Image 1 (cartoon, rainbow, N blue to C red):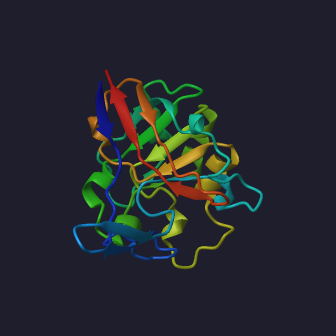
Image 2 (spheres, rainbow, N blue to C red; image 1 turned 90 degrees about the vertical axis):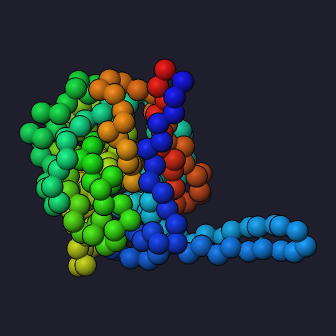
Length: 220
């Protein structure tokens, strides 16, 4: 068995999306004699690789403390859109052309190779990213995907300085259907053009709308 790591790295130079635009705080503590280290981290839960739940946009939505892991693990299928240019809006036609046969219950992984190229270049990673149209989000939900992952910053309005809580149409479509969103995927080009076993374990934090995650696939 081979494990394919699909998770972006994070550190003190990693920023959250423009809504907060905050770097991750990493505070390293040592104690003598000898060597002993403990590190504390302060970060937005939407920095780096993470999962989103419907509490992100709806007061009565589900939180990380209540979502079982079977919602983020299972058979995944890659929708490889190829290398997309900055600010390209993903359409239904794009997804239909790349669709290898997505079926109900699959985990959909949408690749543009943006994270591979731009991760760590903040704020350009966010403001220059391709995005996903609401219609494309509806197409993914209609296909029956139980979990959808993106290797780009897929919600266009989230990069705008004047967005409001009434925006987020793509998130509303997907999370409103009870489907989990995964952000911060990378290295999707290493996956074969067939179903693979995929896992996205996440922190079980009570009352939060998202949680840090580790994305990986296993190949025989």
